[in-house]
Image (cartoon, rainbow, N blue to C red; front, side):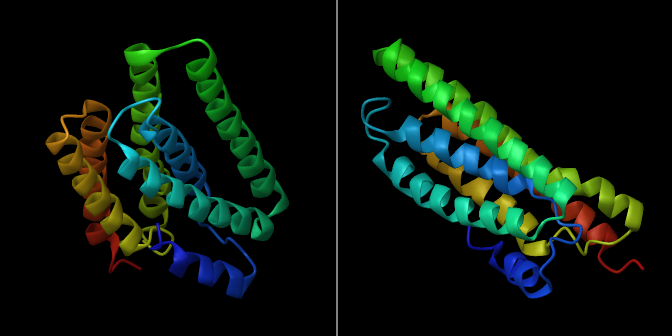
Length: 194
């Protein structure tokens, strides 16, 4: 979550989002919101650590998204703001349906599936810049540390999910670890290209 700080320092300094994609930050926000909700005691027991970590992540990602929107071009700003509104709507629907219509294990399964689907999308979202990397033959807008930490974060949550026997955490995180490997492969292929 703190790794994008380098990217955002550059965005603030240049007062431009350049060719950086805002999609990973918005999707990470949705993942953090849904996973925070999933970890709450009235949804799934003994997952308060999941809520604490992801709640902190939601605050940090909100700041990143806000900075991105401030410095984006008008067209990109509209796209990212629209995606943000969609993300907040999805979270609101999941929270309200689970709170008002579901109980017990059904609530846990519903919220777990929502969080797992979103987590998979979040881990895949940095791949959106891979086409730019292939086209430009440059990794300038796919930071190494973002790719590395997608892999490391996915791997650590995968292990956490396995140890806790929680498929809603283990499965998407295992996929995320694999997607991080894909990003790292592209990074190493194109890192020294013109």
